[in-house]
Amino acid sequence: MSYEKVTQAKDRLMIGIKQATKAMKSGEVSQIVVATDIDADLKAKIFHLAEKMNIPYELVESKKRLGKACGIEVGTAVVAIKQ
Image (cartoon, rainbow, N blue to C red):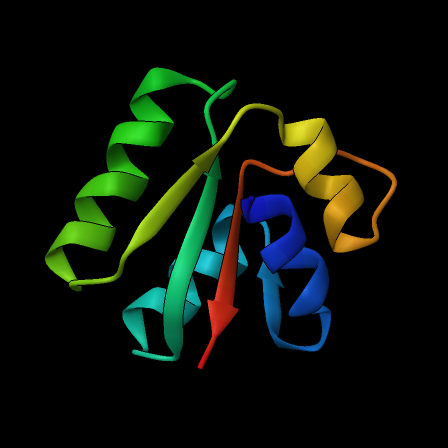
């Protein structure tokens, strides 16, 4: 499960759309995890960038649970795992 993967990589996470996008563009990311309960346009932009940069992604059901797996109190749409 991707939540467990995120929890195990806590010291290598870029949390949130801005930080994850920046890390993806700079080539620092080995994988991203995306919550499916976010805006469809936002999801499409993230997937497009991931595919363009050849970065694998996994989907999870809940942005709230994804945030919790990151150790934060709020939900997050995307998490990038740095190499």
